[in-house]
Length: 304
Ligand SMILES: [Zn+2]
Image (cartoon, rainbow, N blue to C red; front, top):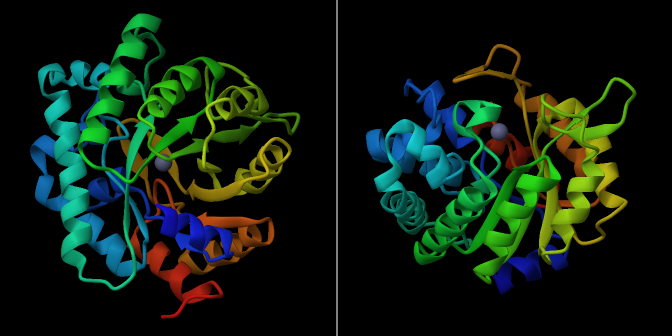
């Protein structure tokens, strides 16, 4: 990780991968109606590894293990409560094997994902505070045991869940990146990407920053909302910035790909992020290996 920090400090652009869950879906995997991509370690481990490899071959320096929807409090709704530890460890192993077998000269990093995802995306599937804290703690420990290089708290969008998730991640002592997920309100305010409440994103940011992240960014936010969300984040965070927005629309349990941004248009957007000081860029839902390859080929500063 010190090598990664050195690269970030010197202004190198680091590439993050694209969306694993939506790429599984695009390749024909039936998504679980409760745990979405979180059940795929059981059903499609070889395909997960293949997708990691495709993102690495496209240019990703950081690949994110498929643990976004694999917290114990999510998997229990898919009938996988007893397998949560093993499935998180397997997700880490698949990512690490893909990195080790890629045979590339550059350093690769495996991130473990923890997120605000709730089973079925239903508000009543949120566990009690005690259950949520225990679940996030268990997942964080398994990801650390699985040997990830860093943890990314993904889709942080409200102050309560963010505190549960980020505090558990921070307990591991692993480098911590925090990804905020935003939308614009009718009045143009930057809100958490959350259909149940209008939480100003800055309230979530303030909670998260108490846990000493090494980097913060905007992810799983619409491309059109990412620049204003980055501006909001920059008012509170002067450290390393990342961005990996989504493109398209989610209708649980399936991503709608017909409106995904073209690779060329995404490179234009990514250059705007760089102009704002962003140093690590990738894609979230809807963005596949072609988008990452376009970043590698289209952004300045890469030795191709
Ligand atoms: Zn996403």
